[in-house]
Length: 378
Image 1: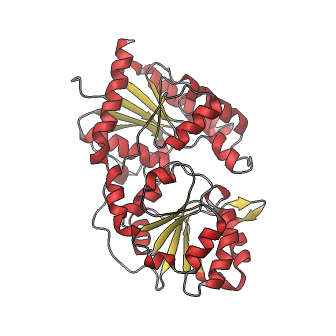
Image 2: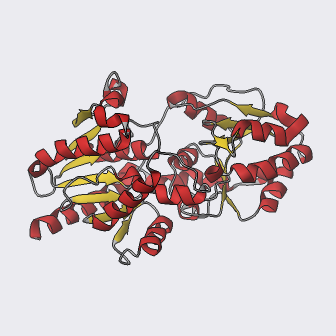
Image 3: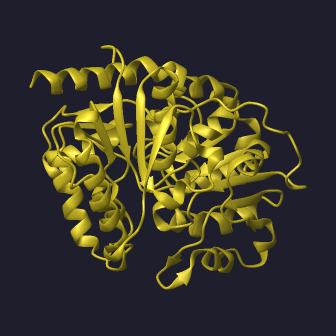
């Protein structure tokens, strides 16, 4: 292999794209590298790639991991162990191996070539979500994530906000984390078809506390009373909050105004793109975010983004969009049709262009080449 080419393996239980931010990141990065001549292997759950030819990337090899007996105890640990057995047996085939922080999926992989990409570790999710148990053995996974992050040869993050959280939380050496954004491919020819007969603001993501549920419970009832024209569409999965459905909680809070709330569930692909494209604005009232792909997709379609001034969102949006710092700012802006007068959306596509695969390719490839050289020289 020529010196400027790479042989790299990605391990992820989440794949193909539209399965979440980690899966989308791996898909985009694998495509970026394969398109430029590198050898790429994606190790993922067998069920993710069977009958999913639409998600396959030319010149990328896929190794499927089948669930086994250990999966009856923990599917997550079962995947991590089996993926490591496969990758460690072919360790010399790769220059580098990259894994996500989430659920410590590379904890059993040999560490001399290991890159850990920070997305949002379970420890942070737990902190933001009132220590709600999401997984069996959650405390074990939090400990394993910390161990993986502290022992990985290299660390990367799409946002300075997450890098700083990791450094402060787990006393990681300052500047050990290399920051570069998540890449995204330009999608064109999105059909401009009617989706709903009314103008709407769009919420995307799991309807949960971390994504802004408690903020919406306080803001939406007041906005719907103040602004009789506004509708809200929710595109994402329901969750439970304090024993009740998040959707039911929002409906109860909004009372007689509930007819202007529209819950359409999780959408993917072309259908998702059409719904984004027809929205008047996109809202992200999260209590913390890293570098979400749904914001990048919104910018790609020239949408006005309204977001909480938290985490990596200010880095992602720059001077585009509207950052809210408190409940009253959300109420005032939405009640007074601020989105109709805001011209910052005209610069959304320009901001999106900073994160395209073509723009970021050299930065990302140079980073991997530097890691490869470091491995070879030490």
